[in-house]
Length: 362
Image 1 (cartoon, helix red, strand yellow):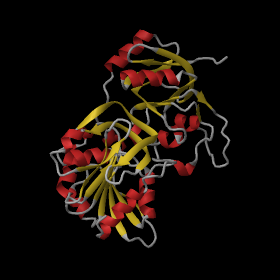
Image 2 (cartoon, rainbow, N blue to C red):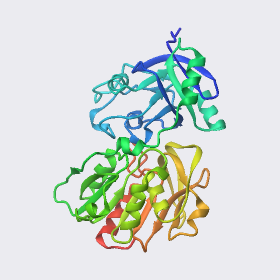
Image 3 (cartoon, rainbow, N blue to C red):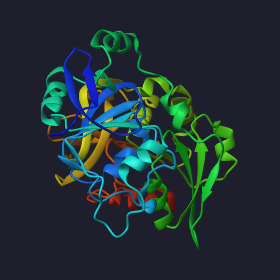
Image 4 (cartoon, rainbow, N blue to C red):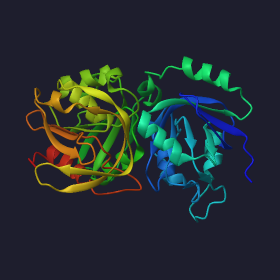
């Protein structure tokens, strides 16, 4: 029989008792779920999960440990992990630490042995909500006071963005790319390096003239956490630079490009998170299985009065998954073409960016 020492309390008062792992601290977060079957390390280290407690729908987590080479950021900022079964004895010759050890080092709490299927159903029915992970002995009334007084932060991008420029170079490079860091995943940089790009990663609030002084061939607008309406500096940056050189945005970058071109965004009921979302390329009819992680989406109707064309659509709920303006030399997708560990269906989008920088029209 499992000894319960922690509990998670939802905004509506429902309580789930379980066993703690990682940091044994109290945390109040936005509660979301992820449907990926693999990649918990990438979820743990994805800056887009800042301030969020993630319910993993796959039942076994931790079984292959943590590998030094697979981090998406150096310092994870996820709010918490909620899992059905946690394995603290990994079977993987590559692993260097357990998931719990990394979470403890970075002050990230976790809870296991809870009914993640029921919690996921609650989120699907009622939408993302606030929740608190705390000791089993914490009075419920005290926890509800903490939850009700908690406000979702609006400075998530400022928290995770780099504070100064940093560089990732590759031998015999052909292109120079400036990546605007709204919470960039390291695999985006790796993918650009693989395509013969030297990458300069700059803070989200870098001025347009400072970016142009770096003489880039193209600009990459990264993924990141939070509400795109709060990242006004990047919206203004895109307004200033669109049409001057190729711009490629993913996830939050996709939403920021939409806002810069006059479209609108909205918060979804529970968002898209996981590596199994079907997306159709409207022109060709080709369907990609994609990896996603976002709470906000671009309003389809609002795109009609802009320079943008909808290029991709989600087959599950018909939300906007891709945008393009050939005249303004920009395109974006809501999903993650750099996805690690997968799927890899949409990696061709990096080739599209390369073709734009080379002057080819594809």
